[in-house]
Length: 270
Ligand SMILES: NC(=O)c1ccc[n+]([C@@H]2O[C@H](COP(=O)([O-])OP(=O)(O)OC[C@H]3O[C@@H](n4cnc5c(N)ncnc54)[C@H](OP(=O)(O)O)[C@@H]3O)[C@@H](O)[C@H]2O)c1
View 1 (tube, rainbow, N blue to C red):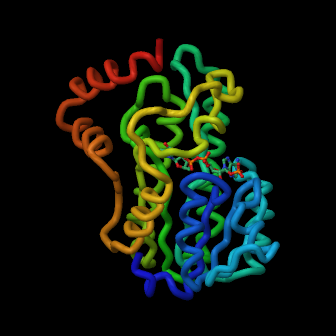
View 2 (cartoon, rainbow, N blue to C red):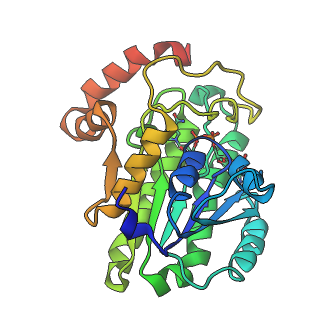
């Protein structure tokens, strides 16, 4: 991390109570800056600081909000406006996964995935635009490699994330003249609670074990996200070969990509 670039900045993180967002909060808390977290539950770090069990150079605030609700986003923005009038970085990171075959997915599961992964970050970004414009800020969305192509057994998850890509791209082109930046970040599998917090095709709690293959730690992902904000040329960021493979193969040979996905994820949809 280039600490000097983050000193004195105002940074908003969504989903800092767990996984990748929690790792982001932890890393950035080491810098003297203002950190504002939005999630339903309070991050452990915030609890420890308020009980004086931890001390950090950053000022950290938690605003409780269910980001699938416009009403709650409006309330959260009103609270945030009491803490700052400018935002340098908005990490739209909160999200849920959804696993099921397309032909076994209820429309409610699509709605839930879109409420959290699409409408939440889109509406929050809209409401925070005046704050971002004031500081010529950067917006990063935590998407996924599954947002780069429709992945089997992930139609609701993939589509809710890839729809977000298009919004970020449109906004990037339009608002570049006001100095704003929009970055799409696609982590590969990461060791977090994503699956235990996910939904199945009926919109019910996902009953699946954690992914047991090769995966990144939330800390590795958070560090790369921070470095991607520091790089003025970041647009669409993937972290490893799995992301690069999907990103390039979708244009070079989609039929080959589909064969690979069919074979690799066969068990997920059978
Ligand atoms: N883990 C992976 O393999 C992986 C890979 C690629 C991309 N991602 C993406 O990374 C992001 C972070 O996920 P994670 O892996 O760190 O999972 P996680 O450990 O389950 O964390 C998800 C975070 O999102 C917040 N959240 C979920 N629903 C919310 C809601 N309705 N309102 C407010 N906050 C909500 C949760 O906070 P509360 O429950 O306290 O509200 C939590 O802090 C997600 O967008 C996910 O799609 C993850």
